Image (cartoon, rainbow, N blue to C red; front, side, top):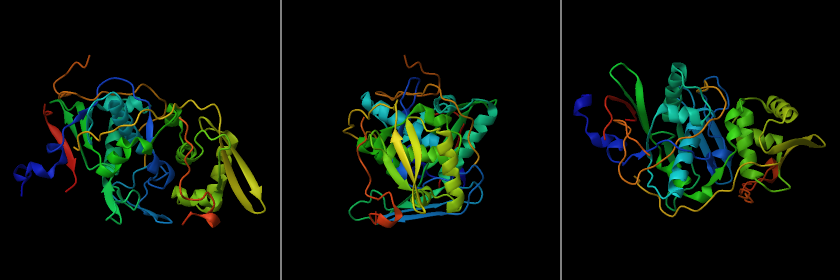
Length: 353
């Protein structure tokens, strides 16, 4: 069947109302499940080997294709941006959707990237990795479901002018992730300085710190071997431990102080909150709205983009659009004590078949 003959129903974007992101600010938010378990490659070099993680009844499997490699923790900035926009819009009473429409400039500046032609190319590479990476997990299973399989982005597209300039982009998030964002108990505010962290392990470690230590005065302690298992890192435990020691020496995590503790031959990392600048997660969202690696740039943070729609908005043509985290997860922080322990012109689309 030729592309012209392919029915539109194959595209989720033909069945979902778009959530149009316009100018404005949105505080960065992260999804709890993504913060503490190994869903992304921590290396900028292409990774094709899978991740397998299991703790109790929690299982995470991540698979990459050789052409693109696995989605990286820098690629995950796109998902953090999307979650931030959805939460902020819902807080303001706007309707949201898994189908986001935006300009590349909005996304790149919000996550602290440059906006040159190279950065747009890197953005498209990140979107390709997010779409081609496949996740299987038992997290948030329904009563009659053992596990779910999805990709971080179901499909995406870019809209260009006749001279090839990108005017807008759009993508569709998987239902698993969208539901994990509109459930405000599953979302945490993060420090904007997160986007300035340059190392994969330190980025991952900040998300672990924010999820587990939160604002608990006593913080949280992890056995290094357990951290290694939770990270999905391909490095040996000994090399991973060296990386952790270097991070402790530099103290790069915004809002947290790190310290190493030893008991015999066992090494542990103690994470303690200090001078947190992140605000508490605000009001609960009642409705879910409409259901309807190489890094992708350099670091540094700027303002975000936001607004959703009450009535239908479009980016084409131009439109003027005048807490405390005291929860700990069910897993232990030690291996031996685990709890187990308007339609856009000329859109080029990348849809999953």
